[in-house]
Image 1: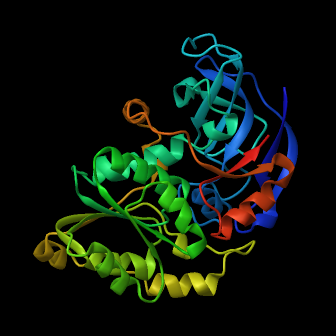
Image 2: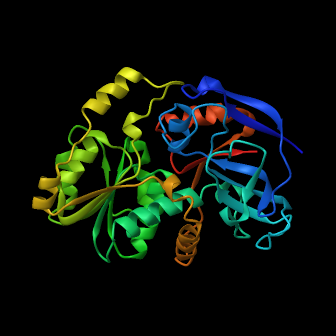
Length: 338
């Protein structure tokens, strides 16, 4: 059984991502083989390729954590899905390929009316948003939530889920071209991030307490957002796009500057202010498969709209897709069609 895969020879540069033809073994007893039809891009992919993701290998591996496709074969112990069924799933690296083997517990059937592109845009985004809002954020009805990178895949799902619980949502974006998307997604208010962010946030709050911040940026905007948290407020940090680079390799001097100026939080100050900051990385939950499956069932029960797919690239333009995704100008999910 053959497959084509984008494999990293050595982490550190997008130029080290090469397309190779390779053999794929038959699935083990508890595995399914999936013909991949679509791949969802995530910021974790970029950090993995750049060698900035501690959870990832440093050489000779296939990046990618999200996919959809059709079951091509199954191990003799698998009963949850049948050959030919359309599925979506997440994998601890290995999605940049035309076919993969994976433990059957990490795939789930796609809704009949979803495209493969939509299937590759659901699991990572929805789980990240849900875990941040509830498991860590302890969201309560009618609370106020600030969501950074609000027009991205996680930001859109975070708003949709929060609105189900009557939250007041304020979304932030990097440029004004994304404002209309947030209005269409029923955000209550929008901030275009700038040097006047603190003033703008104060105006948008208009006397409301800020109960929860979902931060995927880091840096100055994280620090300024934290200052506005109410007593007992929580900030959940799940990304650091401020460290990302639009180039094919990291700008190490820029990274060093960002690292040296990163926000720092003193435990005594946290106690005195009665605020919390929590961080998580979805990949570290990967082995807690039952917890992930329970959350996905809870998310599906909310009756959310279909995933928002912003751009679709063909498989032979995967590098171009990554470069476009890096630009910060995209909305919704960027997907590669196989």
